[in-house]
Length: 118
Image 1 (cartoon, one colour):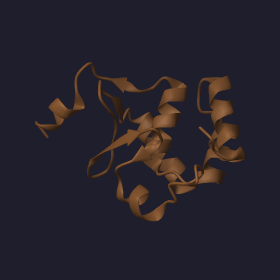
Image 2 (cartoon, rainbow, N blue to C red):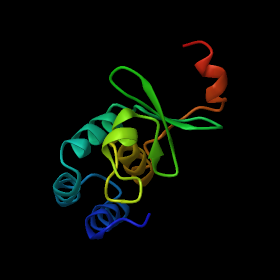
Image 3 (tube, rainbow, N blue to C red):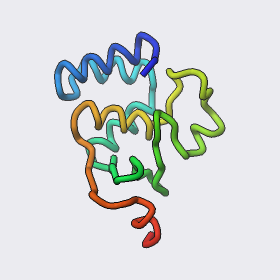
Image 4 (cartoon, rainbow, N blue to C red):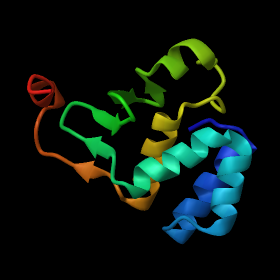
């Protein structure tokens, strides 16, 4: 990811520690605020799911597809600058955190098939 120094700091700290440490959380929250706390909550609740075709974060009301740092949520669409890698919704942050900590819930199926049942 081509984020600013803040993003690099917390991602490096997570990669090194292999867990959410106080300094990593502090940096993450200082850069991303409440979006960071929502992302950490989602990861701790195992709401980051990877299917064969998509990575999905289960939100409070819907599920959101996250691809290449972008997300299908309204926050990403309306509030964030897609050209600024430091502006990220909590769903995209949750995917990065879950990936770094190897806490992604893998499903060996197509999300497009699962979506038909929801």
